[in-house]
Structures are given as structure tokens and as C-alpha cells.
Image (cartoon, rainbow, N blue to C red; front, side, top):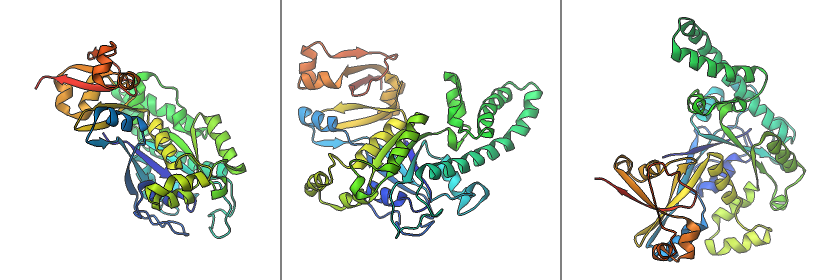
Length: 365
């Protein structure tokens, strides 16, 4: 089950620097000129979760396997991208393929790093990118609406339903609003997502600040936080430069370096967790002598779906899930103690998995 966050933004805002740190590789070239990223770079990263270490210690696990999330570094967009400016539609297409958008905004001043529009204005940058995505979405929709209207007039039920969804998005886009603001019934969410609209995706703003502001932020990052709050979006404060340095340090030196900067943990940990939350995901665990492992499912997943993440046969032959809440597993110092305390549960097909559940599945071969 792959979940992707696309890292977007104007050129020279720190996207590739952030991506390099995120994946601890030099896969994305970071350079002081626009369009240094010619193809989207993909990095698979572990989701930090201290609970996994605790479970492994209690279960005496020989191996620890975290759950993972994928980040895609997408080349810088510029004003006019929807009409092919810069590297234009090539990169708009890449954004359509991700599940959520991480929008990096430049919140630092540096005369040595060129800003494509000659000013530091993170809110203006966000609006520039969002406008290009909205224009591209609207153009895509309008090309599809006309032929669909003909089918709908002929009485085709599926065409009518799809047209109604498209019109919800089109009305918003024509008003200069992103498609994610559409009011949708629960049964409309999946088909609406399948429309492939870039502005329908959840968004997380990353305020990229200078090193001195990594712990406290600055006047620019405050504007980003206010914008995110007004939109009901997420926001994370990060210094990409610091994260790049941290990524290159040996593990034993990282804590001291972060402490000197006034930080408790790498900003990337917060970014990864925020991206995970942005996608509406939760973690369940399996733990035993062989391995302690974290698994990813979407919020609202039922026990058979969770079993299917481990192996499709588990979902098809699902019988029951043996379940212990994380806190109960820890309090009982393992499965046996949780059983003795009456915290071991047998759950059926309708059980909705909770974040932190420690599970074992029974199934028919």
C-alpha cells in the first residue's frame, strides 16, 4: 500500500534541499538555479514512532520494521505553468499522481539565493502555485464536461453522477477556490478523488526558515501559520539547511547538534508525521520474537482490510483479530500480562482498527 506526498513550490525555496535531507541521499540535485530538478525524485522514508521501539523491547524482537511513506520531489513551478511556462504541464502531471501535497514556502532572506519573483512573500508564493494548479484543473475539467453533458442529456445515469461531481469542482475553480473545498457526501469522496484534480488534494505548508529561526519561526513563517489555520490546513516549521546538516551527522552527534539549535528532534520527523496524518493514516503493530513491525491503514479501516495489508490471503480468509491496545500491551509488559488483565480482545470483521492496536490475525488457508 503506497502513499505519496508530492513536495511542490516555486524554484529556489528549498524543496530539493529538504528532499535530500528527507531521504538522506543526494538523489535530488540542490542548486541555485530554477528547474534543477528535471524528473521527479522519489524517496521512501520511515515514519518515526517511538512506540515501535518500546514494543520491540517488550517482545524481545530481533528486528524492528517501521512503516513508510513516500515523498516525491517535483520541480519548481512558476507563474504560467498551467500554460506551459517553465517546465509546465510535465510537472503538473506529476502532482496529479500523488495523494497529498506538501507545499514548501520560502520564509528566509538570502541575497545569494535568487527568488524567481524578486521578493520574499510566502503567502504570495502559495497563491501563485495554487492559481496555476486551479487553472490547470479547470482546463482539464472543462475538456471533460462538454462530452459528458451530451451523455447526461441522453439519460445515462453514470454520466449524470460524474457530471454533478465535476460541476461541484468547476463552480469552485471558476470562483478562484480550490477543489478541496467541495461539500461532499461520504459516498462521493472516492469518485471525487478519482477526478484527478490537483487542488482536491489535502495540503501541508512547510515554512522553510533560516537556521536562527528554526526553533521559534519568524515574521514570514507566522504568515504561513495564519494562512494554514484559516484554511484548516497543516503547517510545519523547518530549516531545510539544518535538516541537511543533521542528515549528514552520525547518529551519536545529532542530539547534541539539535540541542544547540534549540530543537528536541529533527524537523523532518514532524514533517513525516504531519504527512502521514495529512493522508488520514494510522498505525497498527505486530510484535513477536522475530520482529516488531508497524503497518499503515487509512482511518476507518476494518480488521480484514488491516489483515490484507500484511497479506491478501489474510483478508480473504479472515476469521478474527486478536487485539490489544498499545497502552494495555505496555502496561501488561506483553501479551501474557495484557491477557491476565483482561485487555486481550477478539474482534470480528466489523471492528474498526484504532491507532496503536497490537494485532494478530487468524485466517483460513
